[in-house]
Image 1 (cartoon, one colour):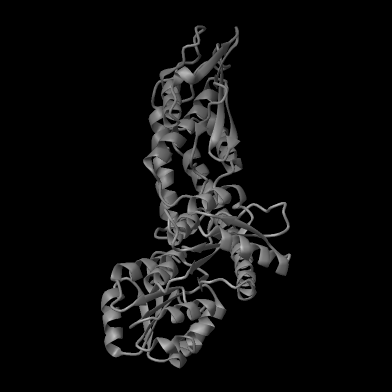
Image 2: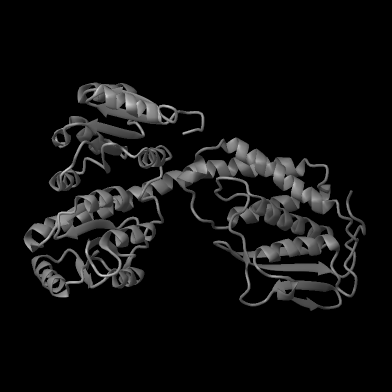
Length: 477
């Protein structure tokens, strides 16, 4: 969605005063279509041929939510965020809404404007809970269910019962949140479900869910409790984004289908994430090709760039294109014009490069190996950005060539480059990339070369320069 397109929210309401209050709170930020019945809303969706970014259902009768044809169809049709706002919810209603998978957030009246606004912006910017890195495939064929409870006798008994009843998944038990996090550190790549009790010493169950959700977004989350804590259940739905709220005591026979459903949800989340990431990567490939062409055109046409060095720019862009980077996310495509970002990148990089090339460059490196000021300046920028200095360079010299390379174990840290996904053009990026490109060009002018090797933000650098002037003897104007 481009920055000039309104974000679409569908509002389903019972009372006109609720509709008017919601429009007053949010109409300035979103495009809101409001309807007083499921039938009207469904007809509007059919006419639009696509789901809105978010659906908000404000009702005085929370019992009708399970029977809502609108919520059910939206649940079946896609990833539209579903927020319900009601007068009062009971714990059983929350449990039933989760079991039927018809809502994503539940708020009681009066609604908190900031919380709802945050949810709506997250939905309209396509920030998905399952858009994190795809888990590494495990060599173990069976998924893992992690059960967390300080009552170890209960978890041990439940584990034995479940293992006797099925062979589709494995079970691990943890007696505390800390032990669960340690297990996830070892087994997170194949953990499909985490089921945790709420009341435990130290970190509570909901805190554990919120902690692990950041690093393991694909793990399906179940919160259990022997106490009827409605506020905890609502917090788990809205903050921890749980799959189920399960009452205790546990019964293996009734819990088994819940765990099977949770594992299925885990597999669906992974598949959806892979499809989402593939779509983003495919979209970014077009951005990368356009950006590469714009940079090549702008830099090779710049009067400050020597004619003989223009093939070096192609080599530089080819090297950057070959570097593996973190995958693109939704943030790289929102709230800005891609063309405007590319223009800012081109202007900034050209200005940085011009600054280096305006520094007089001697025709050759003296026999004592002293580097020209411009080359030293570019090296200092790259090294300092990685917490290093020239003291971390090893110099090797023979009668013809001086070579500088990083000490063993030392790496340049390039967290982004000109052809990587980015949401904004930072001054740090421009300084690093300008210095690196200038180093490529200045090394070529001296008859030498830069060798950059690595990937995933860590690189080795080697600079070789002859101790005599290259043929031609003078710098290109």
